[in-house]
Length: 198
Image (tube, rainbow, N blue to C red; front, top):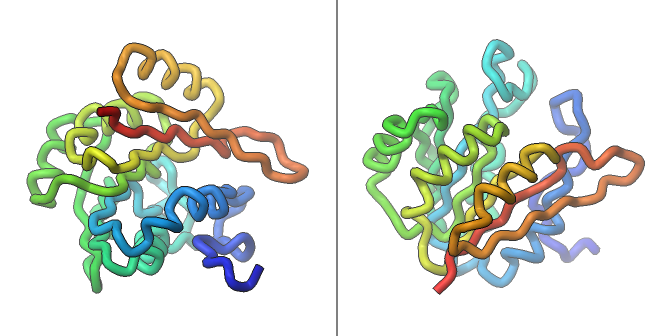
């Protein structure tokens, strides 16, 4: 319906692969928290450097998802990080930093640079490999608030199995979410959604 707040556009994206369909799921997950979330972090600004892994291509728009989170959560400060130093920026309620999510020391230095903790939402939209995702998670989960949500996006099926083993003996509440896209294979339209338990 027209009254529903649209998180992401479903057409006109600048990259040559089908768009992910997280918008409706995120709306259901976060609509009731729009005014209460105060700190959001996302790894992966969307580099448009074709020589870097996970590039959106030269027509990509770095920072678009950070601006979407800023618009959706009107009281939140949004922090982002990327390995591409050339796309880092600051603007109203957005600050970005360098990180190599495969390097635990770089992740530690990232959080020291941010200087904040108790994040309401942490999103990993970075390198999209199990090694990168598990490394970022291991060195970032302490910065999630007790009632926050940590999301790993764009997870391949083989990596879902690795994440299932990774989280099997932890005390986190973990959901593995695969979303249907009409007329397309399921592929990587999947998320791992993690919450702390009391």
